[in-house]
Length: 441
Image (cartoon, rainbow, N blue to C red):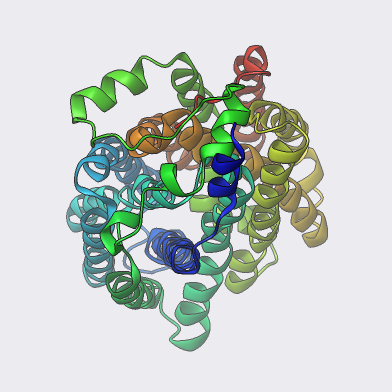
């Protein structure tokens, strides 16, 4: 590579850098914000199960079926919205999702009968599914391959943070401030409405929308050359691909298919804790009150915030932008802690529960971020990032249906042993790809 090209790749533009920080911040806030409506039903379950009128019709199995309907719609939406965001940009997709999610959540608090909750949960699933592929697509337009491990590792703390704070916040409103499970829905909807306004003001789809060059021209010349070991590699901005072109490229990539299968196997455990964590804790810690049951799973979220940062840096610096080794190591540890969940938490000790949930959060969020975020964007490239993340997350969301459904029907021991087996299979699928590298954008 010539000295001129090296100088070009290292030059920074203050305006460009400000926009990168701005896009990082607002997409992070947006995706974390989705969790305030996503987890409202999880928090409300505790009150609904004790409601003298509703508990006979909204049993654990019925609520599990509602979660399954929500997650089925979420899976369908992941497949659709990823392609839409590639074609039309993430702005309209994410704004629409935030608005619809807030409205649906408000009506869930007003109309808690099953006949109304079922369609509202389906609408909620479709709205929630706009967030991941849309915001990641936005990030892919402003950040290049060589920095995505550490940048997206940090960015992906958005969903760990959302899962960390959403339940305690809406739970505080519901059970401490207003004394009603309905307030979980109303407070979640209000917070997402604020996030909608911030996203509308601060977000833009691409550098070109604010008079800046594409990221391929601005920042990735040197990095792409290092990844493909070519002395004459150059970044060239290409026209936006059609839906059919993006779909053909992404589905034809064996690595994308493998990541999708692994994510299908990983996602049930995370969503079981996300959607049923307060109920699982309440059943294991029989003497706890509702607010304790809501706050103990915070340990899961705290560890989840740290995990993507750690593994993103490890994958960049130790494994030289190879994402699979860090993911496999995280999955191996996850298998062990999931298998030990039932015998350890059977003691009924709150601190044992906190420790075990923290270990699950550390290992599951690390692997989750590697598969659904960093590797998905890397192997999708900036041209197909929305489609790749949409398809991989669609696969994961199909698995998440089981995470929402099974806790309503299975005991804790069978549930977590099953999750351990699924994580083990996901690890086996990824091991043959240990040295796999993404193509240049």
